[in-house]
Image: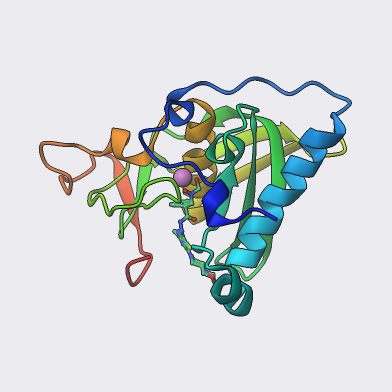
Length: 188
Ligand code: NB4
Ligand code: NI
């Protein structure tokens, strides 16, 4: 299982390197990696397991964060309608997106960034994405709100981008033109 010691932190160049497309059929070690990424986010949201293994909670994690420069990540989050979005995305792509932007009221954090970096992180408000699942099935979905933000945070990791690269360093909480705020309640 993935533990915090396996998660690389900012300063490691791998976090600033573009990851490679994955070829199908998946090599067993890549399939295993995908399963372990999803297992991490599921475990991290289980209070007992998180406590037992000292896991920092997450709704997503990308392969480069465990030093693997392959284009896949896992998401595990509850949507506003109570439905769970829980999958491993291989070779994910944004097919189309809104002009409108969106950002979390609380800003963002990252398992690979051991410090708080305050500020709004503007992202596309609505996206249509496509990716393959671990069995090679093509998936297409439309995302908005928090799921859209989380998907884009993970996709950034595959391109060596960290959330604070998108914060307006002169005025971190400057109003985001044509942007909607996603209320996350208390700080994450
Ligand atoms: C990725 C997220 C940062 C912003 C918003 C949030 C948490 C992460 C980073 C968008 C994607 C990890 C991956 C949380 C969290 C809400 C749901 C359910 C019960 C606790 C859990 C806490 F843990 N970010 N952490 N950061 N990243 N919400 N939640 N809660 O997930 O670096 O690249 O368990
Ligand atoms: Ni991250």
